Every structure is written in C-alpha cells, then in structure tokens.
Amino acid sequence: GVAHDVSSYSLILMARHALPMMSAGTDDDDDDESDANTSASITTLSYLGATRAVPNYNVMGPAKASLESAVRGLALELGPPPHQIRVNSVSAGPINTMAAKGIRGFTDMRTDSEERSMLRRNVTAEEVADAVVFLSGAAGITGHTLYVDGGYSSVAGPIIR
Image (tube, rainbow, N blue to C red):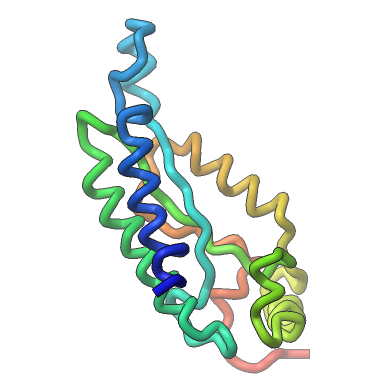
C-alpha cells in the first residue's frame, strides 16, 4: 500500500539510486587514509509505532516496522566494502508536522508524551536534527534506531505525581 511505499520501500529505492554516489572509493582525492575512518551515512525517520501499538496510528505502525527492518537489512548489505555505507533510523517523539496533522488524536499523543516522558517535555525538531547529525558522523554505528523522545519509549506504568 501507499504507507509502505512512502515509509519503507522509498528508503530502499533511495539507497539504490544513491549507491553509486555514496560508495567508498568513489572520490578522486587519493586520500585513502581519511577514507579508512569515514563512511557515508543514510538516516531515516521512524516512530515508536514501529514497536508499540499506538492508538490511531493504524497502518503506519507496520509501515514503520518495515522501515526499521529495511534499515537493518540495508546496513548489513551496504556496510562492508566496497560500499561502507552506514544506515540508521531516528525514532522521534511526536512533533508537529504536516504528516502529524493526519493522525487523529495527535494532540493527545503530544500531551501523553509530555506527561510520561522522563524529561517531562516533548522533543523539538532541532533535537531530532541534532541526532541525525550525530549519526552522520558516528562511524561505528549502523543498523540501529536511536530514540529521540525524551525517554518516553523507555517508560512503563502509571504517571507518578
């Protein structure tokens, strides 16, 4: 369906088309020493609905689960030479975006996240962007999903007041 096309298959297609430009050894600078310590990086955005049942998230939950599986598969395929491309995902907390406007009860999701997260606040788009920048330079990390949700994904049980 459309959800899988947009959320999962598009990552695979993008990686396939970017592969010739991203693979190690495609530059002409003859600086093999720096190539040994760096690699190209692909990072995609996911959401907690990939691993948890989230009300009103509907078909997007399985689509995000598929996306995170594709991240692991691509990391395995593209990590070794000759490509040396790392692939990761960032699972962001609920952020006001155009896509979020289509989720019924999104305001309630943000309120719950703020009340239950370890930081007792929602994350910002800038914090998510910082995580993507971090992963782009973290040469030893691939095939992972980094949660940027204020600790919401690690909390269980009732709110303690």
